[in-house]
Image (cartoon, rainbow over all chains, first blue to last red; front, side, top):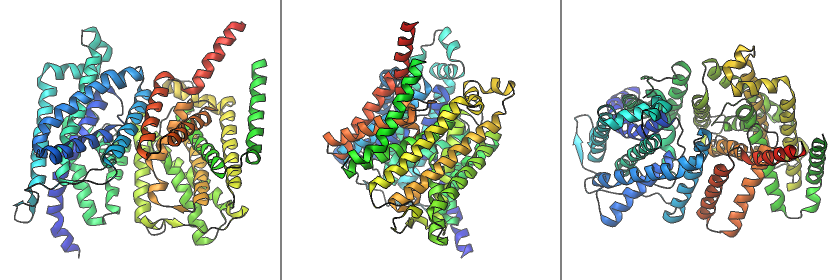
Length: 292
Length: 322
C-alpha cells in the first residue's frame, strides 16, 4: 500500500509544481499590492474569478483559445485594476488602510454577486481540442494544458521581475514602496504609481485566470479557493518578493499535491495552513524577507 | 453631566423596549431578525475587544465560535451533558484556544496584517481538522436532537431564543462598559495607540493582549453553543466560515471600533440594509450587490463608523454650550 503511494510521489511532485506556478502568479498580484500599498486586497479572489469568466466567455462566444486570450485579458485586467484604484478605492478610502480593506471587501461582495446574478451559480468548465493530449514523461503523462500553463506562468514571472528591476517604472514602484513621502518629494506621482501597481497586480490575476480555466472550473466563488493559498505563498516567500512568490508557489503546490497523496483528500489540505502558521511564528518575514 | 443622564436614560429605555419587544411583535420572522441582530452584535463585540480596543485585527474570529459549538455539541451528543453546563465548557475551550493562539502569535511579535492573517490560518487549520477527524462527525457534521427545555438551552418559540440572545448582548455590553472604565481597558487602548510607548510605560503588553484574546475566545465559545442549540446542526464550513469572521469585523467597523455601542449599531444598520434590499429586490444576487454598494458608501463617508457621526454632532453641541 505504502509502496504504491511512494511510486506515485514523483508524479505528485510534478503535478504540484505545475499548479504551483499558477498559484505563484495569483500570489504575485497579491504580494505586489501588499508590498507597495501595504494593504490587503480582499477583492483579490473576486478579481481572479472575473478573469476566469472573461476567459470563459472569450472562449465560448468568440472561440478564442484561453492561452491566446491572455493577450486580451491581461491588459484589460490592468486597465480595470488601474481605474478601480485610481477613481474608486483610492478616492473612497481617503488613504486609510483599514478603509481600503473594507472597501475591497465591499467590492468583492459586489463582484461575486454580480457574477451570481448574470452568470448563475453553475460551475462552468471548458474543453480544448488538445485537453486530453499529453506529454509522456516516462513515469507520468503530463497533459498539455498543464504544461503550457506552467511554462507561460514562468515566462510572466520573469517578465514581471524584469519590469521591477530593469525599468524606470519598476524603480519608481520600489521607491514608493520603501519611502512614500521621499518618493513624493523627488517628484514621483505616488497616486499614479499606486494605481499602476494595483493594475499590475490585477493583470497578474488576469493571466492566472486564463491559465487556470483549462485545468479548473469557474463559478462565482472560485476565487476564494485561491485567496488563502495566495496569502500563504505571499507570507512564505516574503511580502513583496517576486522570487519568493515563485518559490513559495512551488512549495505550496507540491505540499498540497503530496499532502493529498499521503494524508488523503480531506486532511491533505492541512499542510497549507500548517506551513502558514509555522512560517508566521518562526520567520514572519518569509524566505526572502526583503520589503520589495 | 446632563448629557450623561440623558444617555443613561436612553439606555434604560432601550433595554425596557428590548425586554417588552416579544409582547409587541407578533411576527416570528421579525423576532428572529432581532435575535440575529443581537447575536451578530454580540460576536462583533467579542471582536471589538481585541480589534477595537486593543487594535489587533483578526480575520479568524470565527475559530472560537466554531470550537465552542463543537465543544458543547460533542459533550451533549457523546456524554449527554446538558448545554446549560456545556456552554461553560464552550467558554472555557474558547478562552483556552485564545490563550494558545494569543501566546503563539503575540509571543513571536506578530502585529498588524501578520496577526490578522495568522488568525485566518488557525481558523482554516481547525476547519480542515474538523473535516477530517472522527469525533467531530467529519464532513457530515453533527446533528443535535430537538428537545426544548431550559437545560438544553432550546426553546420551542422564537421568544426564548430572543431572550437568550438579549442576555448575551447585555453581557457583552457590560464587558465593554467595564473596559471603558477599568485600568485593563485603558492598557488595551494604550497598546492600540502606541504599543512601544505602552511597553515603555510599564504595561505588560503581551499579557494584556493575551487576556483580551481570551475574553474574545470565551465570548465566541458561548456564541457557538447558542448557534448549535438554535439551528441543531453544525458542520466544518458553518463552524469555521470566513464569512462569519468577516461579519464580526464588519458590524464593528461600520458601527464604530473601540466603542461600547458600535457593534450593536453596526449590526442593526447592516441587517436593516440587508433586509430592506431583500424586501424590494427579490433576485438573490442583486440585493447583495446593493448591500455591497451601501457598505462602500458608509465606509467612504463615515470613516469612524456610525458612532463617529454621533460623536461629531455631540462634540459640536458641547462646543456650542461652552
